[in-house]
View (cartoon, rainbow, N blue to C red):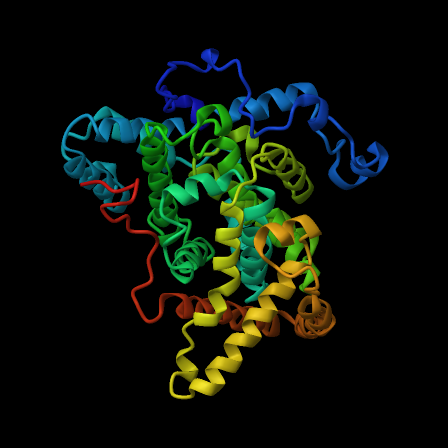
Length: 438
């Protein structure tokens, strides 16, 4: 079932009531005469991406329109919640999510419509292929985290800088960086747990909770005078959600290869299928869900063209992420402070070296990263990691399964260091957070 099957509309800027009243493209997007430039020869681009890299005029119109589009299905639920007694209605939503819509007595039409939508698999979903994608994602081990933290997140602050506006208004500039990383890691581990994306699996439930938070933030920021619609469009719009979602599929697959993790065509297909379903659950329209790696990377480039508003938030967020390892919780070295200090300094330089792999001189300056930083860790470790993976993968199915299990254990252990012994969970908005519901 496609999102359009639910008859609803997304939040709009306070001065408008329909997308027809948005003739102006937000200034965050490059003008068409720049967006259309083909930086890669078309022959090469077709071989790599299947099409020319730059969007055509129709594609660009769809991209800029999406800057005004939210998540209609969840936005409708949030609008219903705030009509009366949002706290009580949020409890009804949570009950339907955890126990099924049938458990809610006299469930309102808005809840029924939403859960009827997400409770049915889209026609294209192949659950066997999706589970293969989940298993395939385990082979990356802690490298998947390096790619997401040091490339997608650090690079995203600079290359996809408009996303920083919503982050700043939700308290990301003051919130402890390790906790934000932990919350993202918790969700990622949930969706990549075997059967985690079954209807009542932890990954499914966590993803819908994240979707709700996004819709609550969108509603709140959309009505704040500080939110500059002419510059940024709608808060957490379809393009912003697309850029975030693509970081977990094609960007991760491309990135882990750079660290020496081999990915077969079959694994790539399965992982992309898994993330296509996760993107659907997160509220992305069908047209933006990537079918293949190269389709996803091309779509990512199109979202990149809508981030033309850099400001000083890039440096605030970049420096906070850069310095995070210096205070990281290391339970195994808790009684050895000198060893813990040395380990933290090593992690600090290691993460910077990973980021150096993708950052240009301008992005380094914006993020507060030395122009002399070299990608020593990925360059040194990649050949050894490649050999290690090939050795285990050639030893037969049992050895491969055991190796995947050990890689998965790396991912789980890594999460512990970000919660500092506290309960692992995704964001729980406090009273000052835009997603708080009383």
